[in-house]
Length: 188
Image (tube, rainbow, N blue to C red; front, side):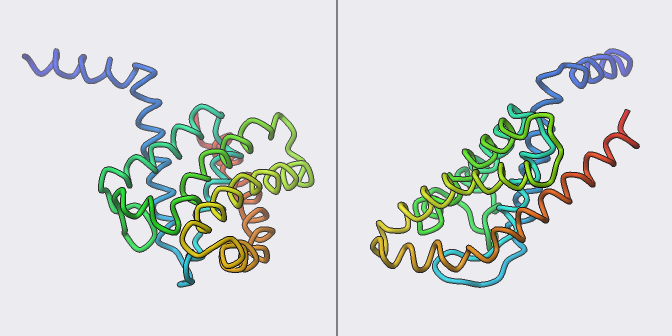
């Protein structure tokens, strides 16, 4: 294969929409992985920037890309890439105490990316993001309750995070607005 043919083949691959979509989804999933490493040690579920990052992804990406990115993140970790908090990975980590929260990111990003609509008002976006926490806490607390019981799961996996929720939402909305501004000004 000549250099020209190889170049044309590579260029056509990049022009292929599915390839571009997959590359975007994987890059966005790595952003979630980086945010997972920014954490405050807490037991049994650590405090990380993942939830704020997932919200920001839902606010800035189309629904299909947002959901695919979070699913890619979960699959990367399940396959052994060290993308979870503390550079953890594997199926055993997913079925551990934090598994419900990790799987809960999928409905969170789906709710946000579908319900945000074309409205950009802070109050509307705050309500949408707040609503998205219902499936996250439901899945996370129910999964955690299989390890520590329902009362302890609510005490350890719900109440400590309530103060963090408005901060995460505000961070996600302002980050999303910054990303949208950068996309409008610098993206072709």
